Length: 195
Length: 195
DNA sequence: TCCCAAGGGTGCAAAGATGCACTCATGGAG
DNA sequence: CTCCATGAGTGCATCTTTGCACCCTTGGGA
Image (cartoon, rainbow over all chains, first blue to last red; front, side):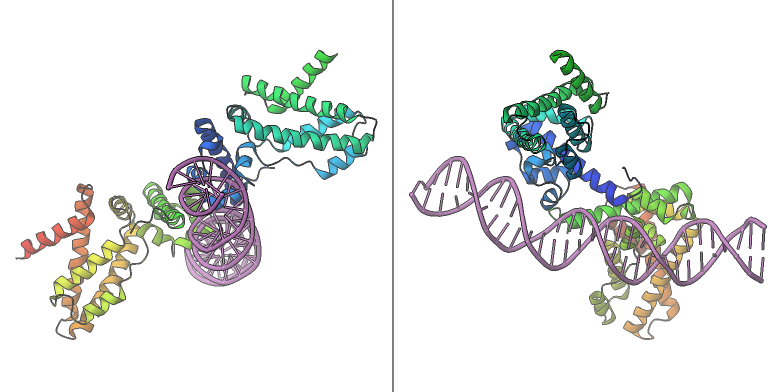
């Protein structure tokens, strides 16, 4: 997956990472509204235009790009797969989401702190989770029709979000372990709690 | 002269400087033939191709680009200007050469050491001075016809080179002062010596 | 209320950087 | 001597970065 022999790819990754790190740091220092795109560009030593070449907006730099589900996996999910168990399949879908979009393990904790420290950012992040939830609810409806009530589907999505957030908390407490491990642990504990 | 507001110019200058510094360091460490363009590219974190986008060859990275006289000033010189005194005018021409091609004051000393520490580089540098000398001789001939014998013109050019080298030595001993100042001091001392 | 400065965001063309496939010269190894 | 590996140097297509002119929204002042 990593191509260290390719200068282009390497520099692109470095620049994206640098932008994210600077954005998070600026947010921690001054809050989300305390810095401009120009400030970020200066901090990351790129032009203002380049920021928009990498991210779709100011929020995206801090929160990361809007997550997108793999259409192939979505198709499998809607068809009732991969395991047939709804909870397991939703979790699998969510796990892929996290897996693909976690470029920097230890950035998760820092990023989470930055988000939670700024009211405006909490709102933006919340909006994102809302969108994801809506997507999931729709997917569940496509998959099982009316077998699941929208309320139940919504609860399911919220559970996944909660699991993610709990995993993030664990990641803060124990940054040494990979995030996916914390996520798995959160799932296990949740099962125990609900058992 | 410096445009800190322009990202392009700034980065270009930085890259060129980085390439020069790395090349000099590599030469000091391993000798001129002890490193390849690929080594330099890796050290300066650019692609091999980019090295050739900046410099015309391996030698140019260490010695700097081949100096070129300003055609306008050359025309003035050939016409007998600007002062009418041959020595003064040649010195003025040479001073311009140095002024325009000295991007980094303290690099002069380091670069000089690198050149003097490698036999091959001394040869290359010598060849350059030869070329410059030939150019000057030709210019003097165009200016004063046969009033100056080629031998005398050649001596004149050599004097200038010597002054430059002496100024470089002074620069090594006293890096705090700008190079042009050392150059002027060398000229004064030479006059005293020859008086 | 009207106006304007500031900041987010986009389109486009020019300038830079890179990868890659070449060519050419040279100094050994066999 | 011949062959071949190595490293200098070039041409060209492609991808990135940058500057710049724009547009749109918004929150204050006058």
